[in-house]
Structures are given as C-alpha cells and as structure tokens.
Length: 153
Length: 153
DNA sequence: GTTGAAATTGATAAGCTGTCTCAAGATAGT
DNA sequence: ACTATCTTGAGACAGCTTATCAATTTCAAC
Image 1 (cartoon, rainbow over the protein chains, first blue to last red):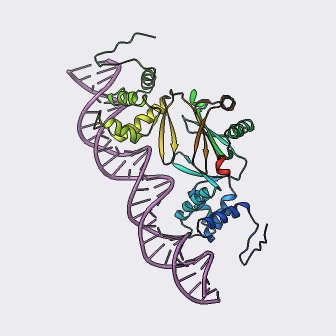
Image 2: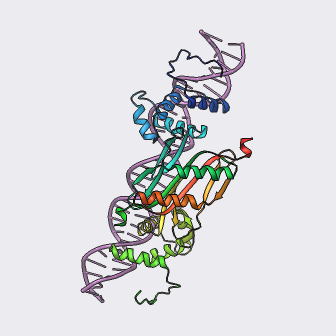
C-alpha cells in the first residue's frame, strides 16, 4: 500500500515491525532515530534479550550507544507492542513477540533451572477461552513453577 | 504421628506448615526461632505478600524485626516448599502455596480490563507437560494479553 | 536547504530491591 | 547450665533500572 523508496539511507528490507514502530512514533509525536532503527533490527534477530546483552552486542556497531538508550528503546518497543518485558530473577528479559516459536517456561523453584516448552493444544485452548470472552489474543505468558527431578531427590 | 505437646509456649493450633518447617529445619541443622514462627503464622494468613508488606504488618507485633530477617525467612519458606517466589514488576511476591484459589487472567491491552478464568483442561495439559519433563508443579501463572470486544471497535 | 522547536541521546547520578557482613544474642544438644 | 552453632538486626553493599541534564539530532515549516 503506497509507494516506498529507500531514500538516501540504506534500507535492507521493509520490515513489518519497522512500520509498526513508525506508526507508534507518529501517533505519539516521537522521532525515528538512528539508534532506534539500529536497536530494532538487532532486536528482531533474536527471540529474547536483556538490555545488558544488547549493550554488548551493539558496542561493535556503535561504541557510544548508551545503556540508558537501550533500556528506553526496549521499553518503547513494549509500548508499541513489538516487545514484551518479563522479569526473571533480578533481570528483565525483553521477548520478541513476532517470533512465533513462542515458548513457555517450566521453572524449578529449587535450583532455578528453566526449561522451555511448547504445547499447541494449550495454545488452542487459550484461544478458545479468549474467544468465549470476546478477546483476540496478541500474546501470552505461561509459567509453571515446581520442583525438577533432581531437586526432589 | 508421634506425641506432640504444646510446651510452655502458647501454641494456638498445630499447623501442617509448621511441621513442614520443623522438619526442614531439623534436616538442615537450622533452628526454630521466635521470628520464624511469627513470620510463618502471619504469612499463612494471606495469599501472597512482599517482604516489604510483611515488614510493615509485623512492625506492630515486633518493632525490631529486621527487613533482612523477613527476606531470609521467606526464602527459607521457599526452600521448605511452603512459599513460592515470583517476580512481578520490580518486586518479588511470595505466594502461599497451600492457598489453592487459583485463577488465570485475560488482560486487555487496550483498556486494561482483567477477566479471571479457570480451565481444567489447560491445567491437565500443564501437568502433562510437567510430568514429561520430570517436574512436579507447585503453582503456575497464565496470562493472556489481547484486545477485548469493545477495544476492537 | 535552512531554521528552530521539540524530542533524543549519552554519561552519570540516583533509586529500588534484595543480599552480605558482623558483633551481639538465641537455640538446642550434652 | 554450658557451649558450639545458628540467627538476628542494622547498616553497608551490590545489581539492575530509571532520572537528570546539557549537548545533539530530528522533522516540519519555511
């Protein structure tokens, strides 16, 4: 829809998320900056990251990119619906919502081990519950807490 | 099993959790203190608390009870299987595992409406996943995020 | 292309939770 | 009761995230 052209800045491809971000920015009188583009493209390449991780990853591309900017930008992505924050232990994980290899977590309360899993049947039932209540699901979070085999001795 | 007697200290009732705690303490060469008893009885009266909340609640009964002691004791309860730590936002919630009034949430990202629901079939599948991975579930958390009928126009 | 108001950035200070330290005090086995 | 050992309380400390603010960048209007 409409005509796009790359402009003077090199644009590898037109990403859906980039448009989502653009719309969110326009809607809130925010601006599209080099840093936001940089962080978004790096973010979209992974399933979930911490701010600290991205800070080190991006240090190569832009040594002066500040940690505060990364936190601010990741939180912006959450507001735009591109990312989802999740608190694990003392850290915050930012999940890439578009990654549809959506996995849920099984967490051992004894040793902290985290096992990722996926269950289509559960997802189907979630949709059913949502529909019954008039909702359309965008994303979800399922965490099962318990003791792993080793911690039960 | 075995003979209990209240001893010189007034004991209102013999709670299952108090015995669980006693066993855990004995098993690890730990001691039963006035503070641990105080914190446990207060903890069991609620579904979930933060350390800070208990700190204020218990200030009336024991003004000198330290915050560090509450953190230490709540973590001890987790190890004993009485409590369950969960990171919510920036804080840690300690859930009372014995409270089984479990409900899940459907959250509208548009207007913030929260609908509670319960689905036995999902719970059954959760158990299945856990078993397959060698886990025994103590508790879980399921949140579905999406748009409600009204927010979709 | 310039201009200028408004948003953003980077560096660092500050804030918030939660843990560690350690001397003083409590507990429990003998 | 005695003593080794654990626990406590108070504050210092540590890790993660946000606030501050001067300098810079964006973008819409000229």
